Image 1 (spheres, rainbow, N blue to C red):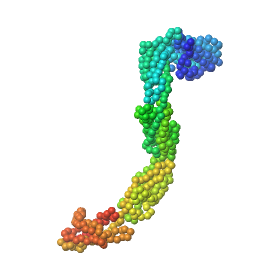
Image 2: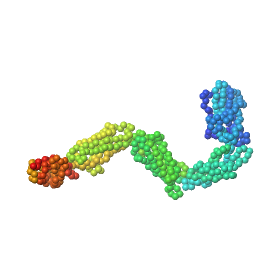
Image 3: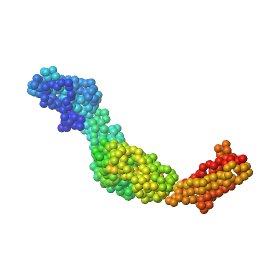
Image 4: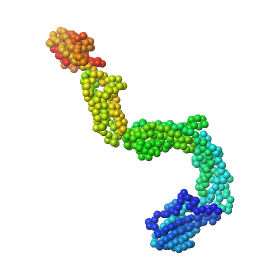
Length: 540
């Protein structure tokens, strides 16, 4: 005889007596409620039995039937009668015949116990009123599958039995569903054939439909797993600031019948040490590969700077695949340092003068309030090999200044560098090229005579000096002579000449108007430019 209580039929939903909260409980103890319902009995009667003890004594036991919802209004109520013992220690029973045509499926059975102290206690069970459904003659093929051959065809017949004394009958037009949600409909004799694909297991379910109980059948399969290879990289970098959003991109391949091909739907676990992941626990993040074998996932770096560890991406050993893993390398959480606004000046730089430098060292986000930051000033003649010229230690990030302790006499590159620490990344300023030039200066410049007769001759002359290690005249230097008429604001070039071997130039002009005379040396790659003072000549 196939008899079982509603509790056994719905073990997942009601594993023990359910006590319903009340404002105050009666003094009931050792209470136990059973609902015995035989789904194959012709009379289909539910038999309720309550065993309970009460110090004050049970005064009433009443049953209530609620259809499918705990909060539904009772569709039936009835008294349970004591059949054994006393009001203090007894058994109360009742029978109820549900109507499967009107209310198939789940019904909640509530039993309210009232005691002499005027308080109540409620116990609850779940009853399933449906016709028994079975799957007969189930077959599946093939018995061995892999990622290249994942299809499983399942066949059988669905039968329904309403009364124990009657033979099961075919279910025509019923629904049969695979684990991958592929559905088919049974034929007139209850038969079905359906295919499952893409997963390393196969089963069919006859879902609850109308007055029918659900049924389930799984296929017996052997899965030949294929070896995998995984590659992955972490972005944006291996050293990042706290709270940086990290992306992990990769691909999984499998050794299929045709060699290495994409592994679809492989589960990848990205394992991040707990100290490196915000709100983490070292578990990382899990994702499945797309049809082309690629996967993309994200996590957020932790808050605390100074932490380091190795991140790993691993294919789980499950389904169609043998697991594999790859290291994404070390992830380092550091404050990000940067040197901005770096400038070495003046440019070009006068030979033998001290060089001035300023810039700003930034450290972000700096939750740790870093201090004692060593910054060095470096020089390189070629931008490749660097020499430390000067250093200082900053108490906190901010502006810094340098003045070179010795004169600067060579062209070259200058930069500031912070070496970094366990908490901070290093930082280097963009190199600033400084062109060092010799100064020049005019001596004994003169436009004469003064005054001069109109139509007479004006002689303009001067001596150009260059200040190198040893100062001296500037020979063979190009010189431009300019004149500005009295009352005008415009200088006009009058002549171009060169200094002689002694650094002198001399040029004569016909006097035509009052005005100013000036000579200009425009400089070169090695020398600063220099202009003479303007000299006024009165023409009469």
